[in-house]
Image (cartoon, rainbow, N blue to C red; front, side, top):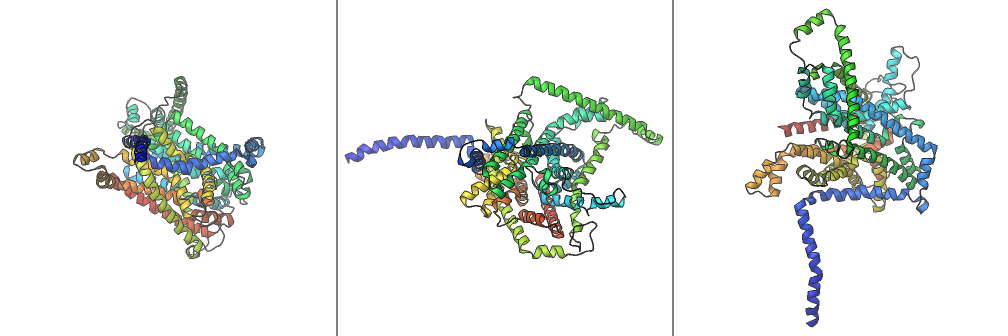
Length: 620
C-alpha cells in the first residue's frame, strides 16, 4: 500500500503536463480550424516534399559520398549547357507566342454574347482537356511527308517534293504553342471576365478612340492575367517532354528528356536529381518573382496584390515605361485606323456618318482581335479534327487524303485486350483519384475561402506547388519513393501520384464556387438549431453539388490524361491508356492510333458537356 501511495502522485504529476498539452493542442486546432488544412498538408508533405527532398539528397551524393560531382558535370559539360539553353529558349518562345496568340481568344470570349460564349469556351476546353499525345499525333499527321500541309503545298505548286517539316525546332515550337495556348487562354480569361466593362466605354464618351481605350484602359487591367498565363505556360513548358520527344530531332532535346534517359537507361539517380534540382530552382525563382509582383491570390480568382514587398521606385519606373509603351501602341493603332477609314469607299463613309450618333463599344471595334481570335481557334482545333477521317481509312499508312472507308481500325482497338484493359484501368484510377482529391481538397478549399489567417497565402502557395513543379521531377520522385514502399506497378501508387497533381485543380475550383456562395444560408440554418454537420449535409453541399461535381471531373480528367507519372510508376506493368498510347506511337505510327485518338476526342467532349451542364445548373 505504501508503495502504491508513493507512486500514485508521481504518476499523476507525470501525466498532468501531457494531458494539459493535449487539451491545449485540441483547443488550438478547434479555434484555428487548422484541422481543415491538416489532411492536405500532411498528404503533400509525404507525396511532394519527401520525394523532392530525397532527390536533393541524391544529387549531393556521387558514388555514395557527399560532393558536387553531379553539379560539376552538369555545369562544366558544353552538351548539357546547350540542352539547358534549348530548354529555356523553347519555354520562352512558347510563352511569348502562346500568350500573344491566346489573348485575342480570351478577349473575344469575354465580350461575346451569352449564347455564343459557351460555344467559344467549348472549343477552347476541348483542346485543353484532349490528351497531349493526341494533339501531338495530330501535328505528326499534319506535318508528315504525306500529310495535309505537304499536300496543300503540292497542289498549289509551291513545292515539287515533300518538305521535311518534322523533327526540327519549328515543329517542336508549333506543337508546344498548340499544347500551351489553351492554358494561357483560360488563365487570362479568369482575370479578364472580372474587369469592369464600363471603364473603356467611359473613355469613349470622353473622346478617346477605340484603340486608345483598349491599350490605355483595358489592357493594363488585364495584365495580371497575362502575367499569370505567362508564368503557368513557362513553368509547364520547362518540364514538358511529350511534344519535343515526338516532334523534335536530336538537336531539340530538352532537360526533361535527359532526366528520363538517366533513369530509364543508366539508373543514374544522382545526376538525374541534379538536373531536377536545377529545373526546380529555375521554376521556383520565377514563381517567387510572380508572387512578389502580382500575388498568388490571382490564381484563386481574387484581386491580385499590388506587390507591397517590392521597392516603390522600381514599380514607378516599370509603370512609367509600361505606360509609355502602351501610349505608343495606342498611337500606332489609331494611325492605322485612320488610314483604314480614309481608304474606305464613299458609300461606307455615308453609312458611318448615319450611324455616328451611336458610338460603338470598344469590344465592337476590335475587328483585328476578332480575326486573330478566329485564326487561333482554327489553329487549336485543326490538329484534333484531322485525325477523325484518317481513323476510317483503308490504308495501313498515315497519308492525306484518306483512302476509302473502313472500320477495321476501330475493330482492332476494341478487340485488343491491351487497349481495353488500359482504358478500364485509366477509368478506375481516374475515379479513385477524383474521390481522394475531393476528400482531401474540399476541407482545404473551405479553409482558404472562408477564413482569414496569417499563413493563408503561404498555405495556398504550398497547395499550388504540384502545378508549378515540373511533372518529370514528381514522376522520378514518386518512382524512387514507391520503389522503397513496394508500390511500383500498383494502381494504388498511381492513385497517390495522380491525386498529388489533381489537388490544386480541385482546391481552386471549389474556392471559385465558394466565392459565389451566400454564407447567410448557413448562418440562417444554424440560427434555427442545425449543427455544423447538418448544415453542411442539408444546405451547403446540396447547393454546391454542381460545383463539387465539376471539381471531381477536373480531377478525373487530370488523372485520365496523365502520362509522365505512369511511365515510371507503372514499372512497365499495368499500363494506363496514355502509357499504352505512348508505347504504340513510339514503336509504330498507324491508323489504329487515329482511331484511339478519335475515341478519346469524343470522350473528352462528353466530359466537357457534362461539366458545362453542371455549371449552368449551379448558376441557376
